[in-house]
Image 1 (cartoon, rainbow, N blue to C red):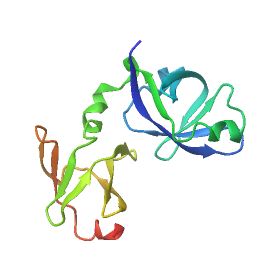
Image 2: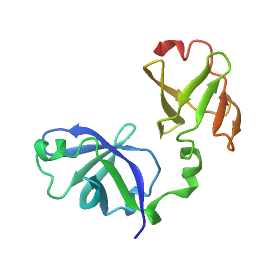
Image 3: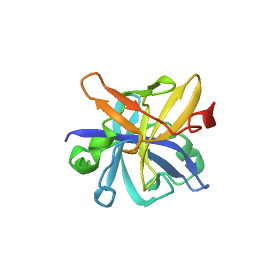
Image 4: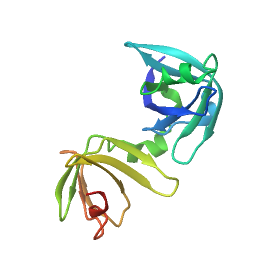
Length: 165
């Protein structure tokens, strides 16, 4: 079985060991029965009791993870699924991970560290001058994409980037 990295557990949720899964690649949530979690270089399988959509992430309940202490042990861990469960229809926009985002006014904003969605639009997270910036990658703001050099030329509306500085 081939595995694909889909995100990581960003934090616990509640006191019963629920975890927040930050998705970096879209996958078929309703078909996933097991998550593979990176534990010291090997992928350990964890069976899902329940998974439900949160605001911009998923709330996951895993078998055998029934306390906040067990949940905390998995925070920050990379999560993978069987590659056949990757939603390739949505994956194109998520393949911009690692691209350099170049704004018309600010120049290079840095490499895209995470690609997510808020339901309506694709969002990218990057670090610019030590500050985390979350920007919408919508067609109106993208001037062009250079896949060969992994660059996205961007024209952010006035004031959007300044909000983070």
